[in-house]
Image 1: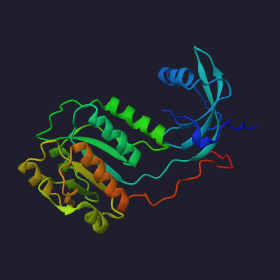
Image 2 (image 1 turned 60 degrees about the vertical axis):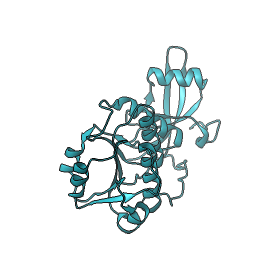
Image 3 (image 1 turned 180 degrees about the vertical axis):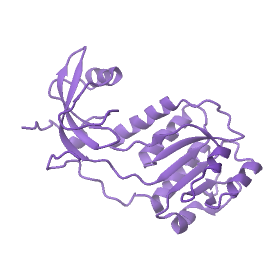
Length: 265
């Protein structure tokens, strides 16, 4: 008989696992994860947690072995399927450490499907630590109950990005020289279309870059309001406006239990 967790599932710690999860699978967490569960969360035999894999959804796990050297978790129940993610990309010029970490963390919390660093002529950060950024995405998903991670992709130059731009995807770019109010633009043309938000570097786009963007027929210059925003603030403001009008923010939270306890096909 499946054990019942000591606490409501929605209050249990959550952990991302790289491998595909399934019923009765035995998980041996990596060292940092095991240290967190054993030393910080004080896990012991019989403790429960929620596991997700960015593929199948969320699962209930039970600790079946716990000592200083080893932690094993058994999957005992399927909870619910992977969430549907709004088809929104965030394309942002890298900024200094700390602020870019915050962008990736909040973008995942807000439901962005993919995040890509875009190198522009005025980008001052020439190295991007994708592993660190992905760890921030994972941590945000664990803390906020997500079952889908924002995909973190390799950096692209603005020129390469625009050269291969997909014909079906709208591109809203925050233009410091002004544009249509973003909430208005998304309301009229952004619904039911795959979209992307492009945020430039702290110095803004050059005239040459603005011309390149303007050559993309799916590109729309937008304004984020009357005040000058830092790049990190602009990214989150733009995501919020898009999600409000074209995303899934009117959806109700899903129930976390699947009473049938069936695993996905």
